[in-house]
Length: 395
Image 1 (cartoon, one colour):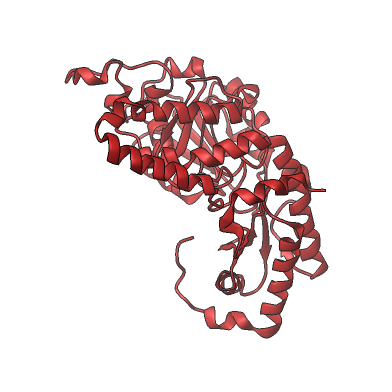
Image 2 (cartoon, rainbow, N blue to C red):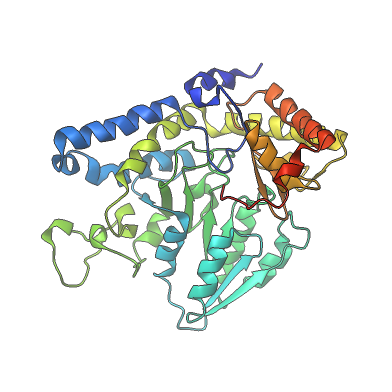
């Protein structure tokens, strides 16, 4: 029996749809509305006093909640608006002026980060991008070979967004450290659906966000720095909240604070920190291990169901290398995904990947069977044809 379904009652947003898009936006917990209302009430009733009564500390408090989920020590995680900003902050602390000035990435990274590094490294060092020929997995040995004594930084996704492949993070981190390089682990598609322990991994930095598997909504992203690394890291992308005494309003050079706030810049996004709280509470209560076991069962069911229908999946068949998403690559996939959404089967589509179906702990087995049946019905009736050539909206 699936005992995690008792948590489904905490998400009334699931009542009128098949919500299978947690890889993009996790379902909203009912309590998130209460916390958002609490923010509005606090603003209305306390006004500017709300800052001193808790708002200034929320980035650290929220970071500590996340730290407990990812196996990090307190005061090692801070909150930023998005992952691109988090990596830009880290990048701004790096010295590319010497021989060690190479960044190693794979071509299946999320495009936003590839854009960032390509632009940054036009004037700061060099970029080596390792190709992933099968479009599903990372060629680990080839990646390890690319990490050498000239490598400064290895930004790598823990789980690839296109294929849900779990990267061999431990091996990459160990090779980088032997070569004298540092690793940024992007956990956007892992934390909340697979078990993660950044301390055991020994990773230098980790980034990600609450919007997906942590059911926390947009604007609440995290930046972890290993404490020994944090003490000697001086981001140039910085601001007043990274100062030891921000309310002195000193206009001289920054006196950097120690701990998580070292990586802050300007005023935190307080509404987003309220909104993400409910999801973090639920994930913490359930525990990553239980979510992971349920996820393997659900994704396995989808892969088997797709294979029975003769559909190709661009997702690892090995559950130990597969995270929470199953991507089905079929003809007219984009149009089929649009029709699914119109019928309240919420999924998305990505080029070179397919229709991404991402069940979470709150989904039922019948929902998984239903969506596969619905895809068959759409194909048989050619109901997708109305969406062919339609302009793609961002999801």
